[in-house]
Length: 468
Image 1: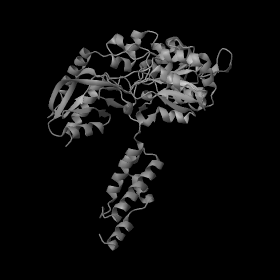
Image 2 (image 1 turned 120 degrees about the vertical axis):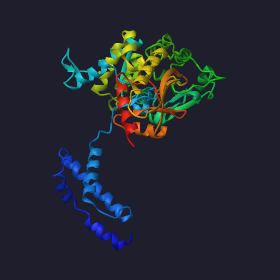
Image 3 (image 1 turned 45 degrees about the vertical axis):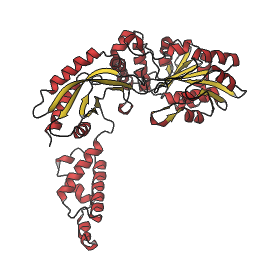
Image 4 (image 1 turned 30 degrees about the vertical axis):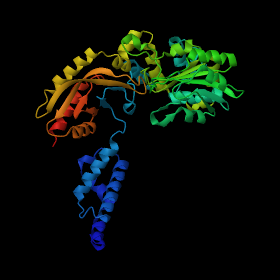
């Protein structure tokens, strides 16, 4: 379009006030806040202006402007954080929010959020108290630790502990334990930010006690052990047990810290899964400090939990960084309710969603898959080929890295569209259904589909398949 032809189009674009006046006659805008409406109008007009200048638009239509404004308003008024259905089979899916909270935690959050609380009030004395007392006694009871504190996440816990115990000193750690987890979180980087100097010992696959012993100098401030919770090194390997490292630390008066990463209070080997190190094992081994996550194998809210010897934990509590990393009352409410369930392990395994999904038997997944398949077979219209397939679920969240959980899934080969198109439409639906594709089939894993969500999947699928 020649430049002179664009000018009339640009001139005919209505002003914001004119479009705003037109919206008053349109029911689509009756409940839209004025600020949102004005911003949307400006966005639409600016986009139209650019389209005209770039020859993407050769006409201006008032009805089109109102329709685009309505769409913009809907987009702005839709919450960005959305509830969705996880049909991937990945239990601790980091992108989908990791651990689901148990019923007790949700109820406690609502109760604490709806009223004032004794967050930092000692009701017995009437004086100021510490927020950590809400969970410290429980954590110590469940782990055997002398003291405990909870901060905003495990990266924060590691940063805080290192900064407190080993700032301006050397921290000795095995090369095979310099891990990186999701979001480019690397142990060496956190160590650097904490003010420590990293001193690597051993090799990627083999580290011996003598490597730690030979690394000790007058500048050594801490021995750090990091659990390989999100990877495995197999074959010709060697590592130093925590007990041996603690003994060496005592000989040289050097504290020992272990970052468990996921961390668990349940012996999963009792439920047919590989045994992950218990937090209580590390405490019993004599570590001065142990850190682990709240929203992984614990099945609670995002938090970094620090347990250990009283002297070390008291120093951590006194660190000014503790305030910057502290958790809020809602996290404390959820964490306390989750921890209380662990007093009865059978109840914890049944009522904490993460534990329930991880320990779900193959037979249970078969029953759930058969039920979902039956529901989907009642969908009206051309659906495609619905079948059952024995596949695997994954724990996710940087835990049990090599573990695959045998699961029976429901698969779908749609009749009227590609599998990729189906996956996209389901993902963009409301609520979003997140599944996976394997062998050119749309796979729905019942392990992570919550009770009652089968009907949501069915109705969403029926709508998607019926849409041209």
